[in-house]
Amino acid sequence: MSAPDTSHKPAEQDPIESIMPSIPLVLPIVGGVLMFLLAFIAVSMA
Image 1 (cartoon, rainbow, N blue to C red):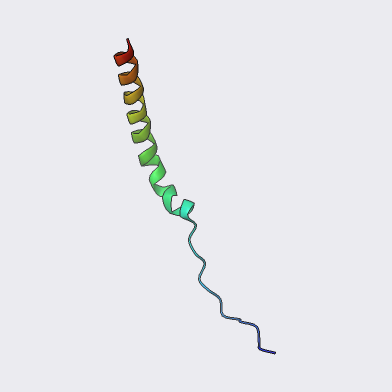
Image 2 (image 1 turned 135 degrees about the vertical axis):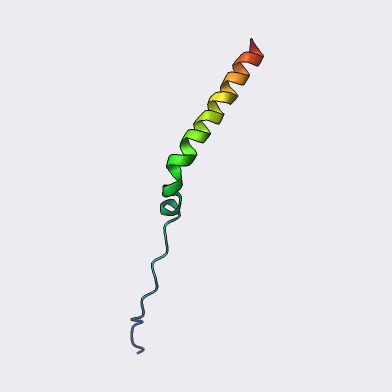
């Protein structure tokens, strides 16, 4: 029988962990755009 593979592969980075640092910047911008779009829809329907 062959010997078990003892070489360790480097741990892959989680995709969510790669986005985490940008959340405090992106979240307010997306919130502002969403509020603008909702206000635009409300004004155009009135």
